[in-house]
Length: 143
Image (cartoon, rainbow, N blue to C red; front, side, top):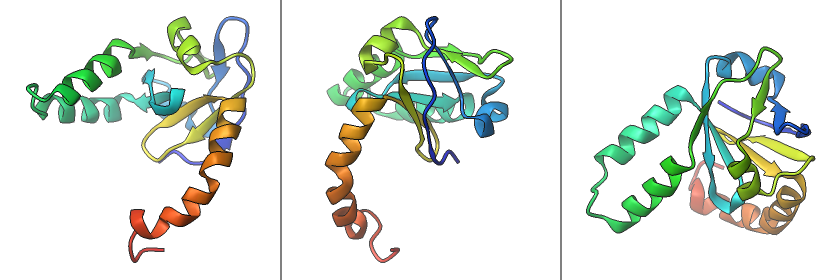
């Protein structure tokens, strides 16, 4: 499970340090792809395989499945962090997410998300009220 908020910086070669507590889990490889709201999703290989299987069993006759799968897989890149725990983010994904220097890496349960720091601050500010209002809808009777 991935938790927390981290603020690494992107270097001139398009690399950022993965949070130290997740480096071992991601050392053998990961998949990075486009996420919603212009962030990037970083999946351990096993989790990406689980999602792949779910999409494989979805009806190819459904236009939404085809559209989502095309973007999701076409933008995916399998990467292996270097020995120092740095992840190289492909240029096309850096452009998609608007990544410059200051980034935010958040734990999002089964994945990490990489955000441009300003975009994350804006998103978080916009979602604070909705977060407090949605708990009963998202987790009825739990919180």
